[in-house]
Length: 272
Ligand code: KIV
Image (spheres, rainbow, N blue to C red):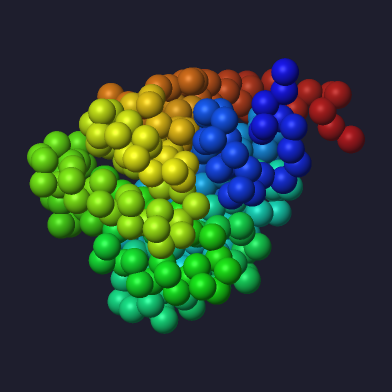
């Protein structure tokens, strides 16, 4: 029997809702460039996130804060050119939506117009709900992001698990309900206790996508470079590595260096 995901063409926010209703898990991975997005598309992932983690993974910054709207649009448009089926969601970067709702709307419109993406993602709850509302009014689908929100790292002071204390956990549940009521089509929950994430997924009707939030949510997201073992420094408990590409790529490069230096490459068949 084919799943909803297999039986539809273009993935839309409505398809994700149907998947949640049918208890079919949603898969989401990051991509910041055309070639990676093509691989994710070929493999059949439902949602591609052009995350502001590009600041860490692509540019080597310590936090996600420095990436600009222009840079996000560059990454997003590269991804969109590779994708026909997956839903492409783009992070609004730090400083482009927290100031006021008009600024938030202008930033979201630039992403949609200049990249051709399908939706935007914003970090936060009650404090940004006016911005979310204004973006939604313009017809732009919005995904929320609660729990460990990396754009607030300077407030948190640590990347440790969030919402362990009752007060923060209660606030998170309220924020999730508010995001649903405002009209978000889904929420990412990052690095919170699994039982709290499960409670949110049962309490709200929109899809909940977890990263470090346990298995009792509606889908999972990982950073592609982390799950493929390209990034090495980052090893949280929730990260399952599906490959050790660092080792494979460096040994291929070492072989290339040997071949060039020993005059093995190029051989007669590899020249004109
Ligand atoms: O920027 C990102 O990659 C993200 C994921 C970690 C969810 O927001």
